[in-house]
Picture 1 (cartoon, rainbow, N blue to C red):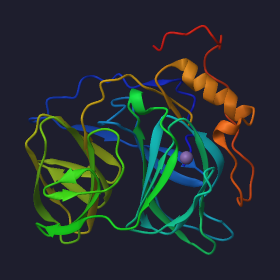
Picture 2 (cartoon, rainbow, N blue to C red; picture 1 turned 180 degrees about the horizontal axis):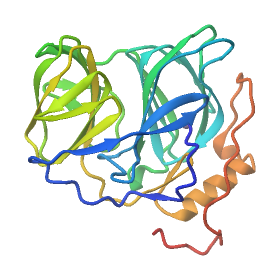
Picture 3 (tube, rainbow, N blue to C red; picture 1 turned 90 degrees about the vertical axis):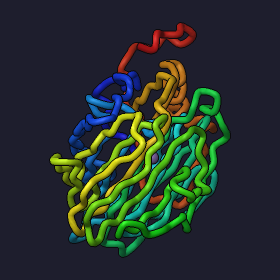
Picture 4 (cartoon, rainbow, N blue to C red; picture 1 turned 120 degrees about the vertical axis):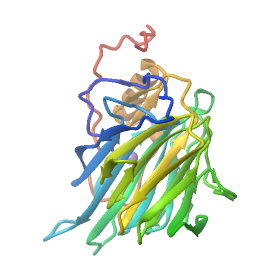
Length: 322
Ligand code: MN
């Protein structure tokens, strides 16, 4: 999807260090944004926290039911650099097209992963006749050494699934217990979907060197006496060997984690960069229709226009990144 929030200037990743999570849980309440006509709840980046591991953007779209002549999600051509867009579908079907020629419908239970690297553009639209949308879309920052990797698109129709403690678990990326997802990752990270139909207590093993967050997508999760409802991200910090919680029946949650980022990144519009020049160059290349971002065929609608940069650009003069 696309980031329409470019007012809060640049978003440096420099968070307070990952909290020692022994007993502390931070509550991050998502704010509402609009993406391609769909209201989304954005948990990352937030004022309190920019990243969890390399996860640098966390949108929860829907659940939405399209009424009248709404065509649902309809996001025109727009570019990305320096990141992977990661889409996890819960309800509805969305068609992805990109400048590599990919054309892929994503259905519930599947992951679409677009590695932007040096540059790619894409569109996302609800398939014809679709009336629902419920999805999570996340961005993963690429490490400095991989930031200019060749763009690619991967679709994962089947992911590791198992049941434990009354929960249906799906491993979206990384390793968890003895499960291993094939999802392409450039840094140590993990993502797990938990369906907690019957609710109850769950205890999950965690890695001490990862920081984690749990985002309820449906229902409610309780850590000790603290309740977290839908779109209230529980930031668990690092240094935990496990986490225990109680879920209300009918709950669903996303567990995301990873090694805390050691690099500063800048997020601006749909770009992740390691300095302002990278972002300025990408903006100029998109504006001028440079071949870097290719062409998309088959989408009905105009390309998105990059907003003006929030700082004055003197190309060749490397501005400070902070
Ligand atoms: Mn996008």
